[in-house]
Length: 178
Image 1 (cartoon, rainbow, N blue to C red):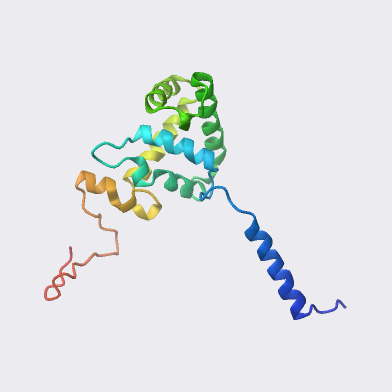
Image 2 (image 1 turned 120 degrees about the vertical axis):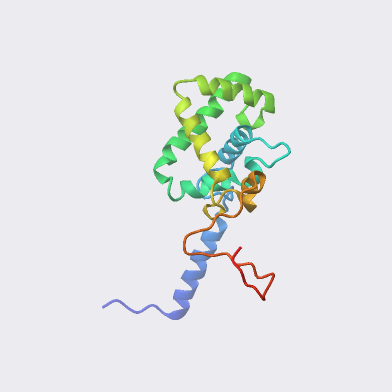
């Protein structure tokens, strides 16, 4: 019969394991993307939905949305994203000698126009456009559209969710639905 572990031995092993886990620092705050991948995707999304007088992809949190979804619902697309992001950076190095995120905005746009015509990269680029739009216009509870910026831009009220009524408590006498 195995000898039972003493309490001190158990605690020491737990502390050592926790210290080892904490010592491995992540280079990125993302769940799926590496910091370099996140930079590339953010630069591409900033060209897809640029900021002007209205917020763009960066302000709306499209990259955190994509990162969250690639750790959940979009999990089957992880390989596609890894290969697509690497291909964009490769094309960028071939085109301008720098990674995509390091290019000036005009060069980024020129490169994306080339990628859009490239039969090998067009499917990934189309997917990234579609997912960027979902992150920009979708419900904030899914990780994008931070502070409902796209809905405010369009003048769209907070849409009702079935089973959840939003009440206006500013006038306690009425307590009417908003």
